[in-house]
Every structure is written in structure tokens, then in C-alpha cells.
Length: 245
Image 1: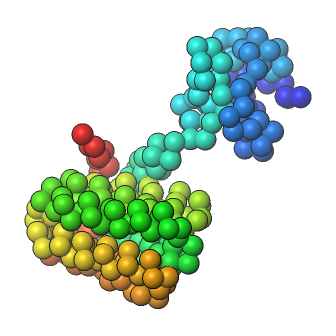
Image 2 (image 1 turned 45 degrees about the vertical axis):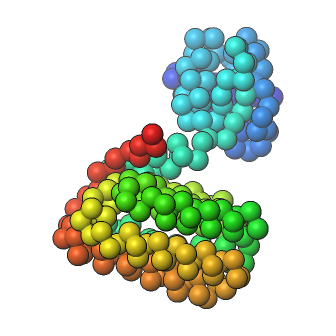
Image 3 (image 1 turned 90 degrees about the vertical axis):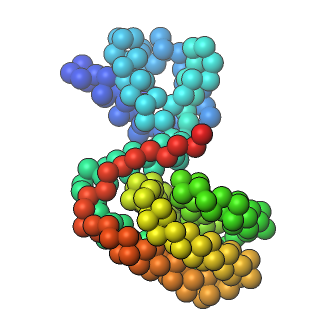
């Protein structure tokens, strides 16, 4: 049975109560919520108050429309979560150095796990991304998108969902920090391609040590490119959205 919402700021209480039920697993992913009438009665709120609370949960991605009227419990879209957290990072004034320090710790760790745990499909995905990258080296935005996709694939292959959530926002913000890099330092794109090839090969060979060494080299190379370009590594990074079209 759902607890009653307090009358003051009831819509916020509605969102908190239902979020708690979802997080605790009492409301299951994919489960349809009761009708608005039943939910409002269970929570002890009016239907307008209930709708405000439900709207907040829709925005957060915890529920979605399953039909014309019914709402369904859902998991937030990973890209939406990454963008939200990247915005939060940007608002803290995070700069290149802050993100690079995180990358130097998390990325070698992630690729070491990937070398142990990657499935055949996940390994093939890495090779597919390398092939795509080789065909788009003249397109700076595409190079950056492929770089983010490659590192995302590594995180997923590590079979640790917490790692995916930790690394994705950094990748989103680094996209903004890297938009002008390859135009300024053209050789950087070729070094990136070589690193991705070596990393994919090491993961496929289950060679965690070589994978980690190449990833460390890759991340250090990234910093060198930033230095050669003359960019300010202490300046806050302004979040800019990726364009996929």
C-alpha cells in the first residue's frame, strides 16, 4: 500500500513516493501504473496534484507513456542521464585537467575489465567502430562521436553498469572540449585511430595488460594534443551538444 502524500507540496511528495517505490523494486520496470483515479485515491491527493508529480517522473525518465492514457515504469535513457550529469559537471566549472585525471584512472580500469569480460559481439563492435573511424578521419565531429562511442563500448563491455554511468558524463563534456582539437592538430586523429586499433586487438586477445597500457598511452596522447593546440586546460568547459545528423 502506498503511503499518503502530505498536503503541502503534495506533487513533490507524489514524485518522491513513486520514485521510492520504483527504486526499491516494488514497482517493477515495465509495469503499468494504476489509473490516475486509483493513484490519486491511494496517495490521498487530487488528480491535478497527482499529474504534476507524474510529470516530474516523466521528465526524469522513470515513467513513460505506454499508450494514450496509461503510464509505465521505465529506466531513464542513458544518454539523457549522461547529458544531465554532464550539465552538472559543467556547472561546477569542471575543466580539461579535472576530466583528464578521471579518464586516466577510469579508462584503463574499464578496458582491463573489458579484456576479461567482453563478449564476441562486444569485441566485434569495437572492430566495427574502428573501421567506421578509419572511414571518417576527415570529419572532425564524426571522429569525436566515434571516440565517445568507442569508449562507451569499452565501458559496456566491462559489464559494470556503475562504470558506464560514471564515464558517460565525462565523455559528453569532453566532446565539447575537443570540438576544435583535430582541426588544430590534424595528426591527433591518426594517433587516435592507431590507439583504438591496438586497444580493440588487445581486448579481442584477452590481453588486459596491453589494453591498459595502450589506453594509458591514448589518454596521455589526448592531453599532449590539447597542449600542442594551445588550449587552456584550466578553463571551464562549456557543454555543447553533439549533432548526429
